[in-house]
Image 1 (cartoon, helix red, strand yellow):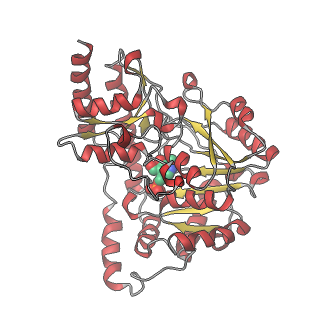
Image 2 (spheres, protein in one colour):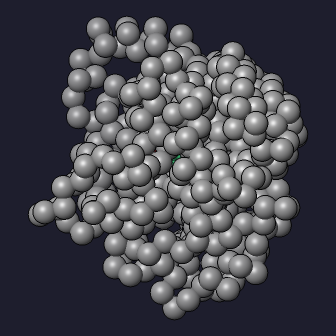
Image 3 (tube, rainbow, N blue to C red):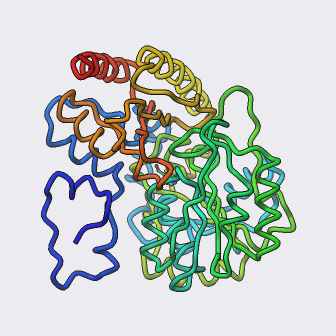
Length: 408
Ligand SMILES: Cc1ncc(COP(=O)(O)O)c(C=O)c1O
């Protein structure tokens, strides 16, 4: 039996139950990937589903890695399991320069195969069966699945939609039980694009301190922040240094989603435990991709700044196109990342899986059902504006035509 809310289940894909573990039967492929895979079966579809930016990995990185492939005798070999020491040193130097945070790179950082593996390492290392993890609702769908896979229990904590999807400290306080082990924060957030203020982060930090909770930070979109907002990071709270486990990624900052490199940072006693998980999962992150990441940190930052600038423009485009559909959607303007999470206004269309499957079949536009992001996500859709301006316009031309037909 596949999981509830599965798009694949809805469209009738087959699932073998016999001899398949309960653990896996209870999961779903994230609806983000389900919708994108489904779209591959529909010719000429336009994708607003996956957070897969249109940008290529910057040319200087690709050129230098091509050279490394031919000349570096260790490029095809395992790297040390915790990661290339030079890469870890560079990451620590950046942390000091950008955030004023001092860490010991060789003891506290492990390089992973993407932020996703970093997160999975965190869950596997800290969760006992039945431990609860507080996840924003709406929040990143894979956190829900990963916590479940690691034997934990995801607990949805509703955000305040009318206040730009702000975190609700009272709701966090109310959600803590004896079984709560950790909470996870994404800033700026996926799927809402909201930014958590320093004051709210400090309030959450206080709660974590009071109850001895791990604070897992997952920040692949840190660089995508608009409107001159400043990001605060939990690593800047010294009183939490034994409780914060920070997960980060090269995927979005350097247009390197396919290279699969991220990193995890925690106190030394925790990273030593995590190395056991690293060894079982991957041994080490791909060496070639680690070298590419080191090159990314050495090369000019200009391509990233250009990507952020372009994303700002795309945010304006998607907002203005949504404004033209004000009888179908309402929305909160995102402050960061590259997602928007509009509410579906007509009552009869508010089942988000039905809505997204219908929109795909009838207009060829791929979006993600809001229910994938926790209970508060129902009645919404996630749209990503990391695609080209032309693709965003094409998607909205189609949605407008579709809506004119449906509305009659
Ligand atoms: C909030 C969040 N965390 C983690 C990831 C995974 O990123 P990576 O490519 O580093 O595995 C994503 C990807 O979309 C994400 O949105």
